[in-house]
Length: 70
Image (cartoon, rainbow, N blue to C red; front, side, top):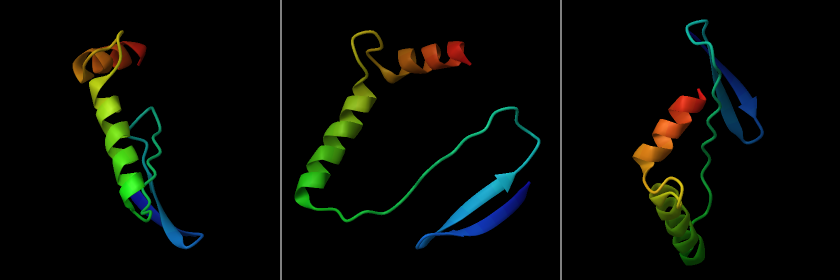
């Protein structure tokens, strides 16, 4: 694996080149100012994602379905 660092706006991009995997992934992490409203919305969003939906009521059933799609 060869890490490559590049300037990206005010931040930095880290790319890791490898032939080990047959798929690609992109993860984006960035800080943003947290106020009371954003904290409530973030908490609501994460709890909703964790709970799932009617078809996939928990993370295990959602993960199984995602594995089947792969």
